[in-house]
Amino acid sequence: MVAIILYAIIRWAWYSPLRNASEEQIVHTAKQQAHFLETIRGIKTIKLFQRQDYRRNSWLTLLVEQINADLCVQKLQLAYRLLNGLLFGTENVLIIWLGASLVLDGNFSIGVLMAFIAYKNQFDTRASALVDKFSELKMLQLQGSRLADIVLSEPESVSGNHSADAGSTTASISARQLSFRYADQEPMVLENINFTIAAGESVAIVGPSGCGKTTLINVLLGILPATTGEVSIGGVPISHCGIDHLRSIVGTVLQDDVLFAGSIAENIHFFDPLADQAWVDQCAETASIAEDIRAMPMGYQTLVGDMGTILSGGQKQRVLLARALYKRPKILFLDEATSHLDVEKEQSVNSAVKTLNITRVIIAHRVETIASTGRVIMLLNGKLHKDVDLRPSLVEPEHGS
Image 1 (spheres, rainbow, N blue to C red):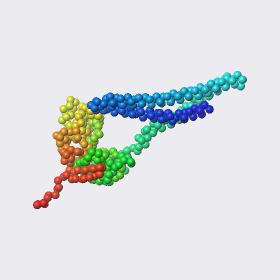
Image 2: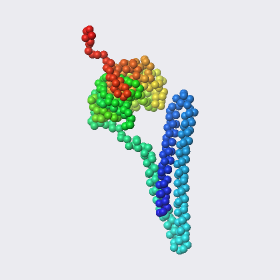
Image 3: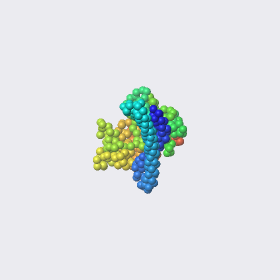
Image 4: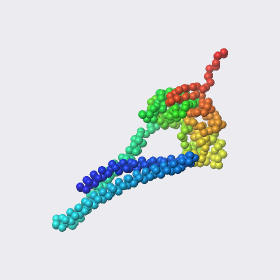
């Protein structure tokens, strides 16, 4: 019993340094693997800037630090096993010596001694295993603390308080006192934004880089929850109709959109098992990508590669636009969706989008794209700076004015 108590004390004393060493090991392993994957994904840029030696040396440094952290953990475990063996080995020697002395004095029989040693070994094994399991459970807290930010985060609420029919929803958008920041200690990225976009209206959101345009789109889409204020679709707050309902009526082409491994057709209809090929063709025509697809050896069955790597930037953007249109959305969000196109293709896409009888919200910097809309909302430092209607006045000017 004394040996088990000593074993528990040793195990507890070993817990803190072993936990710290394991934490260091996890951190260094994560840094090394992240650096390696980042290098692989950015290998083209690294070669163009001739930074191969720098990246290799940085990775080797991280690898050495990881190995050293591994060795530290192994040294602690080896020292623990050595001390453990010494403790129970000493206990066994003392038990056998004491038992042998009692047998020689006639106080014990050989059978009783052997039975005692067998029961003692079983007790030591079970008791030490219980102490080990308790220590392992404590060590799991190290992994749990790393996952806590994800596991304990509230899941996205996709359903609203009231059911809504996508077919009857009016495609208008309004923002009321909309503000957003990424953390309590961070400054406001958006502050007191107010506007209303009528159904069928085409609006350009403009402003200098970093003024909050993309963040505003993400808040309107429910990707980022508003810090204060609310977004309404068809006069109904998103909290009532639900994120799922909102996303069922919108199509998007965002800056960080990606294509998935598969054919061009599969990416346009987004792997719909009941895909309408005629509608795929029509969406490709509207996005001005159909001609490029037909020129490819396998046409719509051409594989896009890893995240669309076989396509040019402009082709990828037009495929993404065709994918957005395939949903038959009532509202279309475009975030720099024509930034990689030449002037001719951009005009073609803008003309096609302009004819769509849907609500369009477009983030753009190019004058041609802005001019294709009917209204401009300008952001400056996260605030609504201007709201200008570009449509010609419907009221005839008086004679002589």
